[in-house]
Length: 143
Length: 143
DNA sequence: TCAAGAATGATAATCATTATCATATTGCAA
DNA sequence: TTGCAATATGATAATGATTATCATTCTTGA
Image (cartoon, rainbow over all chains, first blue to last red; front, side):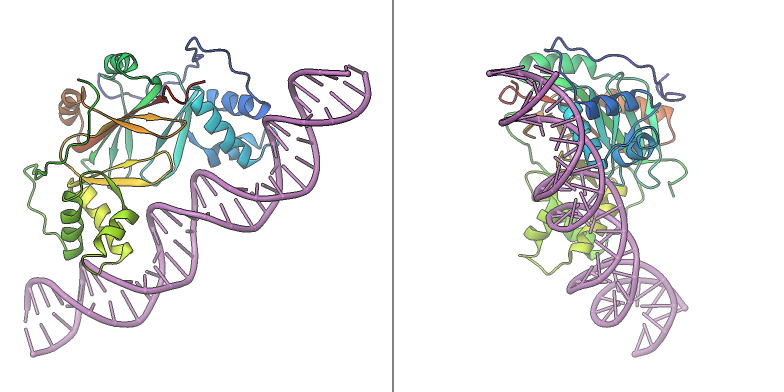
């Protein structure tokens, strides 16, 4: 099976053997909120969701997301409409996206794991996550 | 060799066996300009380059890039700073990007070609290109 | 040659993201 | 535990890339 039927959403701690980072209140809240979401969310959407539970500013959410990203706890992806979607780092999220209508279909297979390991060795980077997205035109949009 | 020494830039027509699209003047200009660039450019940068040669509006460039993208002649990638970079579709462009300082290193290997073919069959999409990018923290940025 | 439709350009409008700055919190030393 | 300095937070203004608007100019087929 190459194409996923639906999105996964089990939560899983992303530990990389790093010095355990101390998160601020805001960062912890944002991470918690993200981990309870079944799919990736924009900062604004997260704001909408979170403010119903607790008072939190939009700027704090943006700052927390950036920090969590650099810590390797959150990953991001940019949609065709230019908004950035964030999700807790768990499994990979790969998509097949129609350039015309924007529909995105999740992809099951990830052939990149191996390369990621190689890169980890060959470069001086500590790699946290990757994005893989295919672009084309879906059947319904094709002439 | 996994990491590229420098960017490639040979030009290559992207024909997919589609009905030959008639490009507008603007689209043709933009495509030509892109094909003469050694690396991906933002729409604004392209505007800066092109207006020196011929009069062209920024809006036209954005429109042309979108159209060329849907035609499978141009591919895009979004940087960490939120600007979209465009390049003529030739080889793949894959990167290893530092979440901290934003530096991007091109990657040679592409393990995705095979999957792309599989997807082409398993889905109703006509796939034009894909993006693959690794995110982490580079040696100089790491504590 | 002549419209009708499409493309173009200049510019205003959008909208996600960042910067700013005053206030609130936190962590640590005494 | 108190007091202070550093950091985090929130509200909001500013930024900047992209899109929408609309009047004008090309194209193209009859």
